[in-house]
Length: 152
Image (cartoon, rainbow, N blue to C red):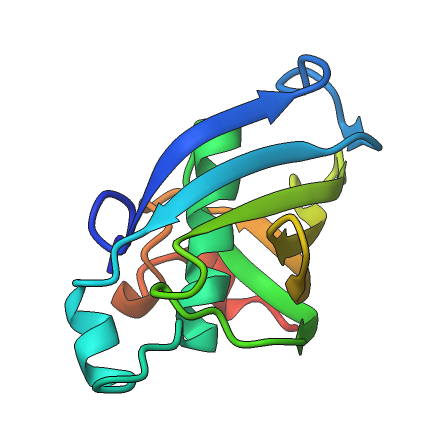
């Protein structure tokens, strides 16, 4: 399920350098997002007390990574995820996804990525993910991606 333009919208993207042609990124790429508190996800999770589900936080990171590299990727490995504080779209309608590290393997095409989800005063989550290029559009649930059959 694509969450962009339904659960969230990209307000701004800030890059300190052109990273599309490099294999290492030691500077932040910041996506500023607006969360849609009226989305169906928030009606179910939880009625009257909406909280962004952890699976959505990870999916948003994947979609933003794909947006940055203009390609389709699958999450090969979730190395580490720390949910430090809840994200309520009513209390925190805007969040930043800060891609702090992005290292690519020239051999496999995999990317090791570190992301923080935060606003001006709080860090909500820290993610350490490995992405693999997907020839079939990056849809994990379709099980068509060859990369899903790799050993983790």
